[in-house]
Length: 287
Image (cartoon, rainbow, N blue to C red; front, side, top):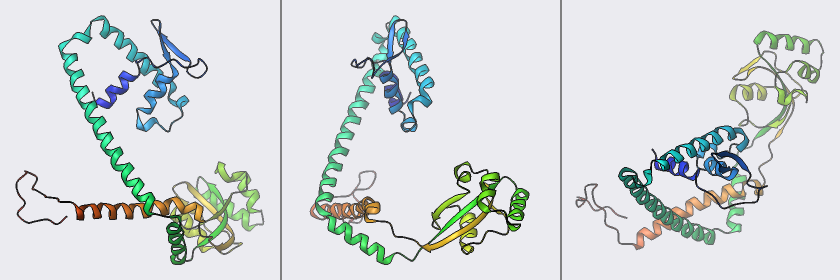
């Protein structure tokens, strides 16, 4: 069993410090042994793929896993497996791996904290603002369109909608009556303003070919179905505000600064490189 999974299994049967009944309720009992909600939350956090999922969505699966683990633990203890030579050997190996994991984590934390403090000291608010202004100057002109759409399941259904629009039925009413897009149907198919990078290519290409007031004369096929599109307005895109991009700019500057810091440390350090087998390198490699 993978060590991390094994640790997760162990955590599910460990008794955690008692919390107030309202915050850590008993969610099951197994032969009199209480299982608390906190044990399920701990197990969920040990599985990266479940961390962003609401606990309620995986509650039954997690609870069943914890109950199964408790039953297995009871049987193992009944057989006194804690004193079994095989178990002791695996415990010893696991302890060694855990100690190494802790050491590795300590090293990473030290490296990250040092680098973060150096970067924070190097990068000022003025530098971030200057980078933002430079980004705006070099940003190519962008355009946005304000559009509505009607999503249909078939091409023939989309053609009938286009015929209705040509006969004078309002686009908004047609969208409310026939669109299968639940997100925009109630608003008459309104999608608001969007740029060229914000929709699938086929939809974007068709929308940006239309002038304000025009609707597509042929159905537009995308992975979602068949669309009829109407463009209501076109305008120059507004550049993102400083606050919207501040963190991404800071991250970009930080990555550049981190490399400079590391390069500087290499220049002042005495570093000797060897081949993968430990033998001397035939050619000297500069730091």
